[in-house]
Length: 300
Image 1 (cartoon, rainbow, N blue to C red):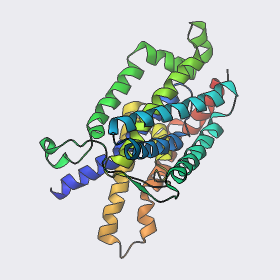
Image 2: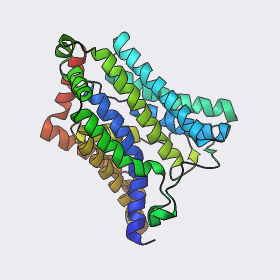
Image 3: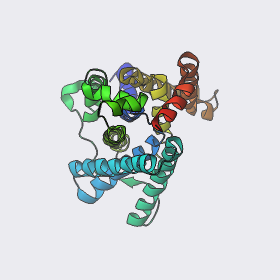
């Protein structure tokens, strides 16, 4: 495998989980929910996938378990926001804490320690027919089709119009018979499935291991990609891949200049890129103002 192919494989392997979780953030944002719980739902998906493989011996059963748990977490977020009237930003952060703490508790309860859990196998690979990219998982191959499907769903269907109306103009949506609360429930539940796939790819795509806090802020990167991409699925997906590119470049720079550049500086590059992306988006599109307005509209 040439160095270029190795670089591309690393970008795709690192960026695919971000893209799936970003799509969950996009559909939630269209429904009027700025989803800061992506990190928590993603780590639930990662943990459930590995534990499911270990306990059942079946990847299919594991991904179903992950989807069910992630949808349940998303429905919990919807209930807290819609029925209990909680602020969606605070509720999302609470869900992130619940996901991180809940996965640690699950591993402790099942294995008696917080050590990393290793599965005997992971997500099915593409195989030799794909040449140097055969080591990638099937979720990588599915990723561009999921992004395209999300674009079609949100921008070219009646459901997409109802979703946007529920998020931007809930009063107008009600006037034409659309229940904004139900539309948000559907959006968050669909996002739960996407987070489950993103978590599964992170834990069992290139690796077959679950470790505590292994998402390492990727859910927040995905949230930043939603803002950077202005809520458009294709633009947000490119933003997520850009963050992945920066992260992989940082690893390469460690190999080349690790002796002359502090290790922590290189590791922080994807997070610095995330902050820069949010800042640029805020300057160009008023991202913070848009987020505030969306939160206010949801309360009607």
